[in-house]
Length: 78
Image 1: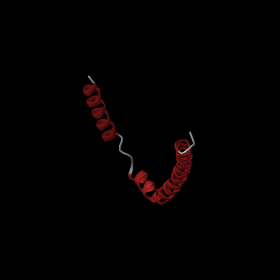
Image 2: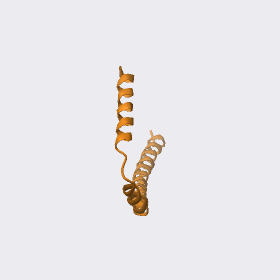
Image 3: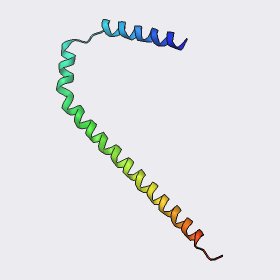
Image 4: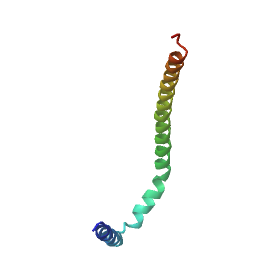
């Protein structure tokens, strides 16, 4: 059943794409806007890098604290 729905959606997408091809002016506008799109994507890559970096720092600090607690527990006098 799932394969039939997938096939129907693929056929619909193919016909929709074939019948609604944009004018060449649209492609020219897209081509001229690509440098702007590229700079926005590079900016977003930087934002993602900052978020991931902050997550890695906090995760690393948590691991260090956990290891310190473990070492203290192991070497604590009985």
